[in-house]
Amino acid sequence: MSIIEHVVLFKVREGTDQSKVDAMVNGLNGLVTLDAVLHLAAGPILRVRSSLSNFTHILHSRYKSKEDLDAYGSHPEHQRVVKENGQPICEDIMAVDWVADHEPNPLVLPPGSAVKVTFLKLKDNVSNEAKGEVLGVIKGIEEEISGIQQITCGENFSPGRAKGFSIASIVVFPGVPEMEAAESNEELLSLQKEKIREHLDGVIVVDYVIPSPSYSSL
Image (cartoon, rainbow, N blue to C red):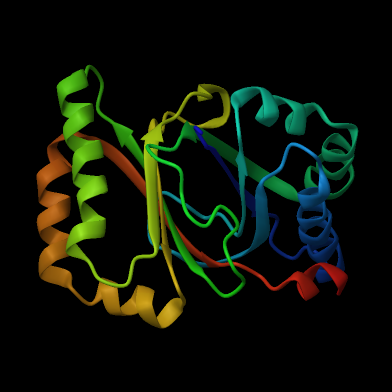
């Protein structure tokens, strides 16, 4: 089964009342009950690791097909949450969708999991061979860095809201300590970056933690 990864980044306006922020996050998390959704989690971003990004919140969800993603996007409840809770308080939104290179296990990420999302913008006229090289480096991270529970990557197929970012990945750790331990391997990480740097025109990296179900009942 091909799994569709859908990630949305939100920039909430500074000074927005926290109750309105909570209403947006709770409304987004409530969309997990829609039939097309395999997994959905939304919450505040833990860390932004890119000067290109000032996003504050994230939503990550999974689907069996592009058709199921479309069904989620057009569902009246999704439209209502976006219109009533998201748009009034957000000054920027971007979204990236890709077909996972393999079926992630588990599909539903447990609360407390630490997730690192990376979006890559490639330089103009980068060859398919170079794209393959970049994806290969991402896939190889799992073998070289301990503590990773799962990783998926792929090319974005929804350019409309992606701001030119065309390759994305999700790396999942059991928790924040495991993610921080992996990041302490600076020598290995710098080597990975060096392999693909010549092909890149921009990078966005954000970390977040899967919230507990109780978050949606605050």
